[in-house]
Amino acid sequence: MPPPVEFHEDAAAEAVAALTWYAEKSAEAGAAFAAALSHAVGLIEATPERWPVVGGEIRRVHLARFPFSVFFRTRGAATLVLAVAHQRRKPGYWKGRSL
Image (cartoon, rainbow, N blue to C red; front, side, top):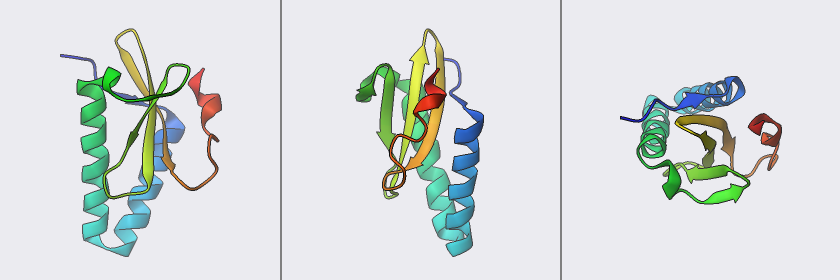
């Protein structure tokens, strides 16, 4: 079994902020966002090489039904989520996290 996917501190904060925003709109939207993020992380954990490379060793998974992408890198057995980024805001702001 692969090791669990870990989140960069800022990526975790982004996920919480997005979840909070959707949950304030409606409980159903919050639950749907949480499920979509959980599903994406599960896919990353199961098949990290499946996702497109967007630069260097960074890969991307789009969340179903939400305008967010999960950017991550895998080194050896470790997988780190670098950003849970809105697709239309500040492209690439998270790139300094990849080091």
